View 1: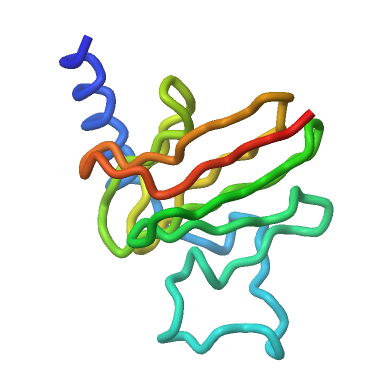
View 2: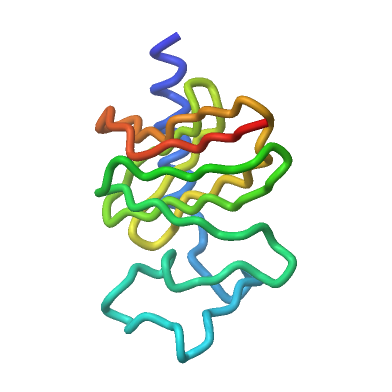
Length: 136
């Protein structure tokens, strides 16, 4: 089982490394100039805002810990994880897995179900950087 997981993580990392990096086709627009961070202050993943009508955006940094998102049941949120290094992010113990690097954030569209309590984990380093919880 561990071998299969390692193989899937390696395949995901290779796929991300080979995917085109053209941001013009993502459909996202940068935030207005008044609220935009200077180009050298944030990674590309932190500077891009969600499109109108998308779920509210929450960002976790891979180099931090103890981050928390509290939701009410039925709420929807877009969780973006940004990192300066290549890392694999998992939501919960058996949830979605996304790859993140300095140019491409990991994103999870979360619909909060009652009792949701999911750790946001970095698989390579074995660290938990935060949690997403929901109350009934």
